[in-house]
Image (cartoon, rainbow, N blue to C red; front, side, top):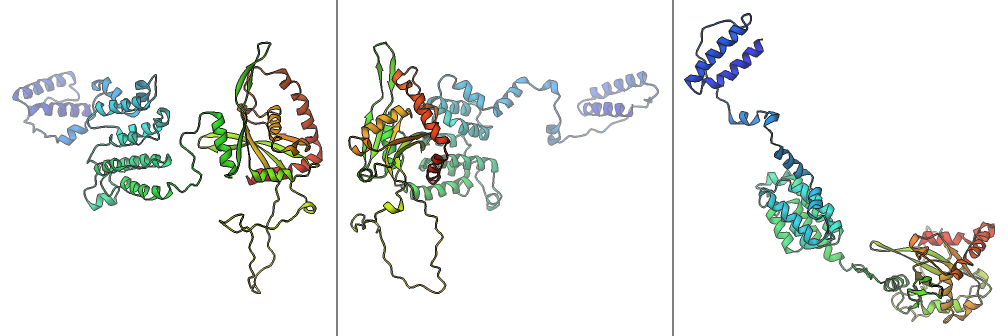
Length: 456
């Protein structure tokens, strides 16, 4: 009861300092309480009470009852956190650069103080690949413009030393790192925005300086660059990929078959895949010198990554030449002017030098030709071998063996219906290939193949 009495007195003390009428109400209230609780509250004469002055900081720190909290404030707090819903609501139908900029405009116009801008920028960086703007410099500068200006700039050396506004600086560095991962070089507008937001000594500004120092040095360091936009035509993509693999200016690309759709007499549609091959003059020379009694092998598919796209190719190779059949030919000194193919150095050796070297020399068979096709079946690859016989007549006398793996689905034939002459002999040829694979002799032949694949 003493606690109830003290709380009641404190509530009435706030009313005492307002007016004299509050004092009369306080006396009447005490009399009513004393009449209701005679045992605990004694009837004492009314005394003059001092007024207490509360500080404004204390008034701000008082908890607000739950019934006075507006539901709109709750929704507003949730909207500051869940920014992914904002992208989904604004860009329901189409996700383009225009809709992405519209979402940014909606966030900027929502609040002048830009509250929750760090969470919004993190959500925007995550959503950029979905809208296709992950390589757009204008969009990155627009996200930097979301930061409030001249608020996070350190004013003295102490603020610079203790990482002034760390969350905002980390967000700016993360934005620049995503630009670095996609190979986007900042411009002068990016620098001006970083100076306005974080100052000239902030961590994002240092990140910008490092990017501007290293990017020009490594911009053209790759001698075989891959374009940002790969060809959409499968034949052009295969031609570009094979030229990149061969790395020989004299290599000739031949399109053995273009993708087409034929209709048979019975009304069935047959989809023919594309077959693109490449062969250099040196490979033609090696194939002409090949022993007809020894077979050649068609192996694949082997993957090749071009940025985010993976293509597959097949090779025509032979086993290594036995030591007794090797013929060492003298090197032509004018064959390669960039670096010598043979060195004859008479160097004096010391007593501590070792004359024996432990070097693992793996002799692999020569690669005689390469090709790419959208459907890696034996019947399709037979057409490629038949096309190679025009420039390599020795293939008509050399046995050809197929060592084909279970490739990806796009290489296993996506046509709905195929002709009967493609489906008929295929199971028998597969059985013939599986039977020698179970024998121990064929397993020995596959050993250099695995080493070749590991080396590649």
